[in-house]
Length: 226
Image (tube, rainbow, N blue to C red):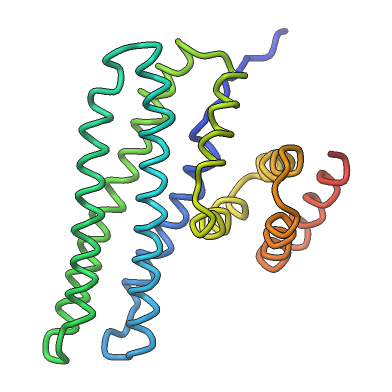
């Protein structure tokens, strides 16, 4: 009996990381003691770092994935362009809310923090819906117009375009939250396509601290066979 053939999903791995990252920051903001200066500063920094990663991710998708779709199926990204603009606007609004929290006086701190939490929750929910649409609608266009080899090459372009200061937080939330085979695939790709040694070693050191011993063992065996 022939096994079902699965097309390559350009969104699968990165979206696992983004979902984990968005959820983590939302939980951190929800448990913040806004009157504690150190706790408040850490949470606001986490929100801003998340927004920076989301902004870079959206720009790369728009510049590379949407362009590839549009070149082969004109008009296929019309709604994606609308969504892109809306998401970038939402990011700017959240930056503004974070600044409001930072400048709030003691009397308004808790209400400002609660406002940030609720706005962030809506942003997370919207991103989850957005990713589901990409995984269905956008993938369908890519699969109709591109071979798997072309999609893999496109994914490499997207990863190469990630700014250096956004790469580590993205990998921090993506790689530990993948299934073992997916994790080995992503790290193997980094090895085969010449990731700088200091970057690769830094990722491995980070993973060793984050992964359960069993998962770390499976990863080292898989990488030794690359």
